[in-house]
Structures are given as structure tokens and as C-alpha cells.
Length: 135
Image (cartoon, rainbow, N blue to C red):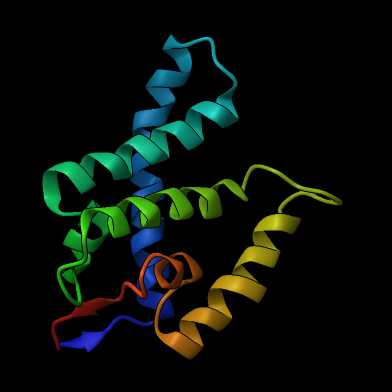
């Protein structure tokens, strides 16, 4: 087993976001809620579902063959999901120009942390949670 790298983590996240979009679109037509809040809420519930029913192995991890390096406690996974959702939500809010918070998050927080510690900032703050993959 080898630890996942930043590209692996990005790939799993892209798969997760694509799947969340498939759930979000019909919900957006059915519910009269702010679309940003609905999208972020759908992302959180999607990840919470996998925490409860699949030991926090989201579909992105499953499809790419990733596992958690060790058996982390439930509260570590819950903290991870909350921070992962907050990180994801930077896509929808900005200060000076669209995607400025997202770019700051990715370039100055997530990428350096993934390169240095082999985990994202939310993984590190959740108990240094790391993913692994088969060689």
C-alpha cells in the first residue's frame, strides 16, 4: 500500500462533486432553497451517508481503490466531513473576485499540506487522517 498523493485526492473529490451534482440538480428543481446552501448541504449529506454506511469511504475513494491508512474513530471522520464540506464551500463564496477563496484554499492551504504531510488540511486537523491505495 502507498499513501495517496494530491492528484489522487483531487481525483476522488472531482468524482464526489460530480455525483453530488447528480443529486443536487433534481433537488434544486423540487425545493425552493438558496441553491448554494442546497448544494453545500447535499455535499455534506452525501459524505455523512458514506460515514454512516461505508466507514467514511465515499464513492470517489471506492471507485479509485483508496482506503483509510488505519481505523480512525467516528469523531475523526465526522470532523473530517465537516472540514471537507467547509473547504468545498469555498467554491461558492468570494471576497474580491469569483473563486478567490477557492484558489487561496487550494493553492495556499490544501496543496502545500498535501505535498508536505501527505494529507489535506482537513485530514490533518481531523487526526492526521491519510488515505492509501494498492500498488
